[in-house]
Every structure is written in C-alpha cells, then in structure tokens.
Length: 283
Image 1 (spheres, rainbow, N blue to C red):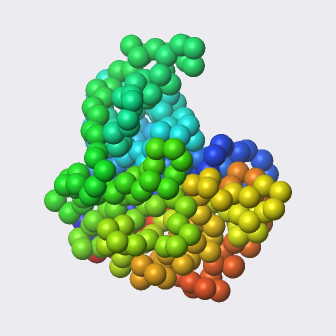
Image 2: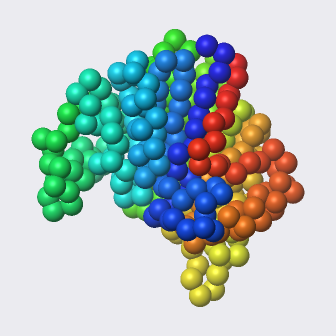
C-alpha cells in the first residue's frame, strides 16, 4: 500500500450550482473520497457524495464506509438521501461528527429521510448505520487500517456550532482538511500543532479578499476564508501543497483561475480542487 488516493467529488460551498460557467471545476458541494488500499472513507456528504456512492457501488468488495462530517450545515449533508450505498443491506456505514448541544446529530441525519423532507422514511435505509461522536479536543484517531488513521480537532469559528478539522495520517505523511473556517490570524496553539508540516492542506477559500471586505455586503463573520487566508496558513504551517476548496457558488470557473493565479504568487505549490480529479499521496 504505497499511496493514498483522494478524489474531489464536491468542491463548492453553500449550495450546488449547475451552469456552463462552473463545468470545468465542478458545482457539487463538499465531499472527498479517500481510498487506502481496499478501504474507503469520505469527508463530508454534500451533493458530491452522490457520484462517490455510484463509484463505491461498482466496487463489490467494499462493505464498510466511514463518513466523517465536518458539521451539519445543509451543504455538507444534503447528498446523504441520494447516496446509493445507504440503501444496500450489505453495507455498514459509520457516520462521525462532533457532539452538538441540545440535540442529537443522528436525528438531524435521519430527518433528511423523513416527512416532510422526504418520502423515503428512516425505514427505507437498508444499510447498517453506526454513529460515532467526537468531543472538543484531539482524541484517539479512528483507525482505517494499519497504515491509515483519521484524527480531528474542533474549531469554533464557524457559526454557530463550529466545525471539525480532519487530518489523515498515512505512512508518516499528513493530509489536513480544513473547510468552513475563518482564519484571519492563522492557525495557532493546539490547532497549529495539529496541522503544521502537513504534506497536503485542503483549505476553505470561499472568497476573494475584495468580496470579503465588500462595503455593501461584507463577509466577515460568515465562517469562511479568503484565498489570502488559505495561503497565509499554508506558509505559516509549513505545508508542502495547498488545495483551494469550498468555492463560492457565485464564482465562475474564470474567477477560480484568477484566484489560483493570485495564490501562486505567494505560495507556488497551490492547486484548485477539481471535481472528479484523482490525486495521490505517496508514502
């Protein structure tokens, strides 16, 4: 097992978009599929998870699927009712999220399948669903296999309940997924220790600096980063490669290319996350 494969199936934020101007880089919301040998796990369940599910169903040997949710905002879970493996009685699906105050997150998940949102009902789910709840701090990692683990840390800067930042450790390599964060001053303290020296950083890049500071509609406090924030974090954390992610649904492909050009001037090893593209982290 010499490589970890990861495929972006959803790269947009807020809501999915379908238009000629978004076809090149993709219009589905947040979802990334990981393959470590024969083991599969997923970060987030936006509309991108629909195509990920179709891919999984073509692989007959996959029985257990771990889904790691960053949080429960609708753009990060709206694909679950259309995720084909959830209707496969041979599948075990483990859903991971943090503990919410005042309600059980599994009730929110099941509500997507129930009236009045859906005619499916909870009884229509045929896979065996298991839930795992994370606390506030870095906990013991979830073991995917002998070479791959997933850890997380809570970040409270995304309104109103916060978000989980995930890290995949693979043969001493590190991949960090940090979406839906607003990191004006950069990662520090425990968060910095969790992220620093990552080989791959996938970072929220919803806005340009101009939109973020727009006098008529400022985006400060929305819980999302600018491209500049992503770049600054990549530099500060001494990461090897940066992927821009969670683009505003209002931005056409040409705007994303402008964002990439801007980022590369400050951090040359930057790429756009592209829907459907397979990437590899080698040991």
